[in-house]
Each structure stands twice: as structure tokens, then as C-alpha cells.
Length: 222
Image (cartoon, rainbow, N blue to C red; front, side, top):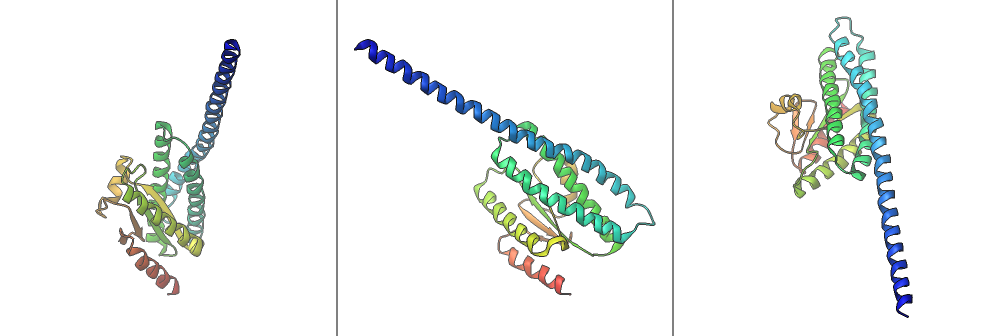
């Protein structure tokens, strides 16, 4: 009887370790797959970053084709918008390792360069499109601020869906320690989650979203 009980005990222990081991193994495999997908997106971003650096130089030329520059800028903005949705999905499901955080910084630099290019195109070719820059904290610990960011993010996604390529949406994390981003937003005196419309109007409160929507509606009707 005692031997039988021991046998059952060891069988149960073996099954427990087997299930635990399989769970850990599948978890590692799933995490690796997610990391690979994120890595692929970031590798593509390196090429895009080089592309936009070249575009920055082209914008300095006197004989710039405004129609083509605006078209390509809008296309690039739509590409960034689609990448943002993919990255958000993968990053939420993955652990925030140092590798992922550093690669995210690279993407923020890409978006910042894109913002600068958009400003240059507006200066040379007129306000043929509108920019919405979403400044947020990448790794905020404050629950209230995280909830606010989620509301802002959903609002901007709806606006982008509504206006399509008439709106260029540029999300940038402001808390990653990148000096270029800190320098660019310093003039706006921003210390919290914010939305900048056309480099002029800053919205920092949830109640401001209605005013922002009204301004967009008004500008589209003009």
C-alpha cells in the first residue's frame, strides 16, 4: 500500500514538472517570436530612417516639387501610423527589455525627423495637411497619466480614421532621454501627456479634446 502511494506521488510530481516545463518552454518560444517580429519592424525602420534623412536633404533644394513632396510625406505618415499600431500590439504583449526600449528610441528619432520634415514642407509649400503630434510617456508609472494617455490615443486613432491622409499623426515618447526630442519640445513647455496641433496649439487636458475636434472640423470646412 505504501509503495503504491509513493508511486502515485512520483507520477503526480512528474506530471506537474512536465506541465510546468512545457509552459515555460512555450512561453519562451512565444516571447522569442514576438521579439523577432519587433526586431523585423525595427530593422525596417533603420532603412526608413536613412530614407527620411535623405529626404531632409532634398527639402533643402530650391527647386523642390511641392506636390510630390506633400504626397510622399503623407504616404510616409500613413506608413508610420500603421507601424505604430503593429508596434503597440507587440510591445504590450512582450516584456520591456533593454533591447526593446532602445529600439523604441530609434523609432522615436524616426518620428521626430518626420515631424521636422513635415514642418519644412509646410514652410515651403503651405499648410496642405495638418499635423497632430502626440507626446506621451513610454514607461509611465502614474496610473492617472496612463489612463489619460489611453484616452488620448483612442481619440487620435478615431480622428485619423475619420480624416485619413488629411491628418498626419505622429506619436513620440518624451521620456526616453533623447536630447533631440527634449530640445524640440522645450519651447512648448510640456511636462505631461500632450497633443500639438500644427505646431501652434497644445492640448493637455481631457476636456481640451472637444476643442481640438472643433478646430479640426473648422479647418476642414474652410
